[in-house]
Length: 106
Ligand SMILES: [Zn+2]
Image (tube, rainbow, N blue to C red; front, side, top):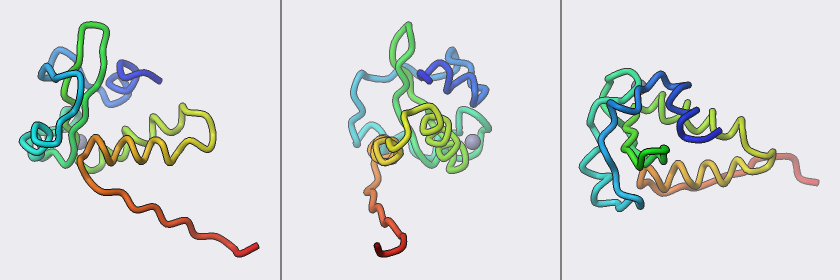
């Protein structure tokens, strides 16, 4: 799934998104937290940059749509690459990620 597919799934019109730089800088991202979610309009919880055919755009999302984004992307990646998705989502959101794996001792 590419970013255009993701926007389609979130029912976001790319024309409604603000232009973004090529690389996410934490200081820029901090200013975007709290902006309306591009999908539902609730206060934004996270932001990320999506790469589209005509350039990069900011995708501001509420908590639920941030999780939905990560879920959509994880579902379309090779199995076993979920940690990569989580790391990217955490980096995009500018938050620290701690992964705890729980399972049976073997
Ligand atoms: Zn939302």
